[in-house]
Image (spheres, rainbow, N blue to C red):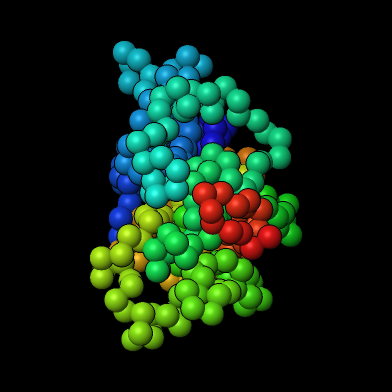
Length: 295
């Protein structure tokens, strides 16, 4: 994501297994307030190599924090663990990060099994054999005062995806009777305890990454609060969420083109928008690697 010059950013990391870059810099007390890009990557920690290509492209454009001798592009990033689907020895690299910048567009965002969502899956409580495919989802809305809020999410959760009306859309499949099992039901069932990740079964790797963006004018503290409130959208739509085996991370971007509405309104609606984006990540995905989808 390549935001306008001067875009303020915040972040909220709640998963127990994050793989991130420059997220500490987004704390309100840190020096730099604005970012030049946000990178969401697959490939676990190795996928952070893609950020080098983003930085190289930004330097060519003259973007970055002015330190006198040069400009240092500020590119916070996070990766998800998708190595259980496809080859486990191929990762995003600097060339891919550079190509992503060259091909960036302000047109409609691609959804489904693309980008960081290419290898994403959900419902891995019983391992990859009973998981389902997910991917990238987006959603945006205009608030009553004209403020725009949008969300982009790569859903690669251990948990299941639920709709805003309480329908189980995608997740762990029941190994005996077929269909969706409901991870929260299985967690309470003693018959399945031996199959859970802590019992030795390969859980496939997880982590959901999201960005919420607005054209409102926010401080770094307010951007962090927006990211925190938006996390509620993940909690509504993914169950369980923020587990020790997920590295869930939400970034917030504020381009500052208009006065901000009250954070109560902005953050609450951002959470609802992110929840809708999670649904899209499940419903737009296509089958891959033998994993079915909810289509």
